[in-house]
Structures are given as C-alpha cells and as structure tokens.
Length: 212
Ligand SMILES: [Zn+2]
Image (cartoon, rainbow, N blue to C red; front, side, top):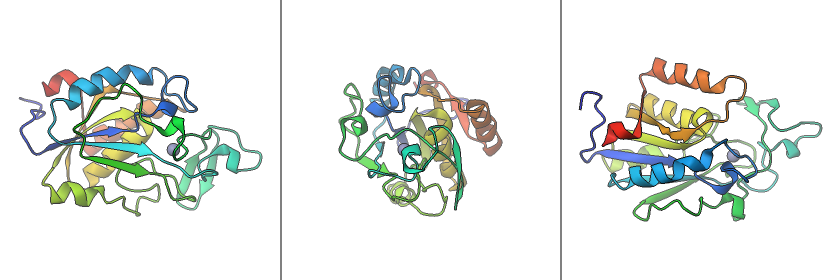
C-alpha cells in the first residue's frame, strides 16, 4: 500500500487509555470518546500484537487539581519538568473509573502497561513519564519483540496519543496515528498543535480503513 500502512507482522497496535473515566460519564470525559470503542475493537482484530495502556494514578496524584490549593481543573502548573495541565481526579488505581471501557474487546492483547503511578510526576506517554526521561520499559519490550512499526489509537488524541506518538518516533519507530480511532479534548488549541507536531516529526495520521 502506498502509505506504508499494510499490516504484515512486525507491527504493534498500542491502544491508549480506553478507560471509563475518559469516556462520557467519566471524571475526565473526552467528548465522544466512547465512539472509538467499536472502531478499536475491529482494528485490533487485524493485529497480531496489541498493547493496551491504562492511566493508573495513586490517590492525591500530582496531576490532580484537587492536590493543589486554589487550583482548578484545566489550569496549568509549573512542574519541575515543565508545564503541567491539572485535571479532575481520574483513573485512580483500582477504582471503576480506571477500568477499561466495558465494551473494549481485545482478548489477544499481550501487554497491559500501566502509567502515571509515580505520585509526583504525570505520564501521558506510553514510553516515558512527563519528564520525558523516565522510561516505562515499552521501548525495550517492542525492540525485544522486533515490533518496529507502531500504530496508535485511543484517548486522548491531543495528550496521551500525541505524547506516545512523539516518543515512539524519537525512538526511531515508524509511527502511524489512526486518527478516526482517537478523540481529543482540545484544551487551548491542543488538537491543532498535535497535528502540526506530528506532521513535523514525520508521524503519519491515517484512517482505520488505510490499515485494511
Ligand atoms: Zn492521568
């Protein structure tokens, strides 16, 4: 296929944070986030190798606005590692909001990678925490299994999908973001900024149909 998105064995689909709290009715709902669930299920069925990520914070996590006196959700804070958007409490370890969406159906996923567990640092990316230095181990997992073409879907397009795609590209993987299998939050133009950043790094934004 001309766009290089044909699936032939060394690809991995990384499904980012399809969890209750990021879907309508959840604590940090991504608008229409639940729409991607059937798309992701169909997509995943075509991949031999699938990794699921799960945002998984301890109570009182640094990224929660409620952890900072006088701060409201969606305000920003200067963290030691750079600006950090503050969020409503979400995806607390073991709580129903942190569970995968009940209709997510990917029984052959080999790895569930949890992130955001360090109390004082957020982790948007599946590869590095927000200091962009502390690894989750996923680069090693993919390299050891010779999975060098990374397809990414999930929530939210302009945060965890974006950071994951950027880190994967910087690590030298070929990266495809399946944009119709993502939904964004769009805080202060973050969806447009994401498209520009991904294009600048050579990350292809494709549709689920392009992987058929
Ligand atoms: Zn989080």
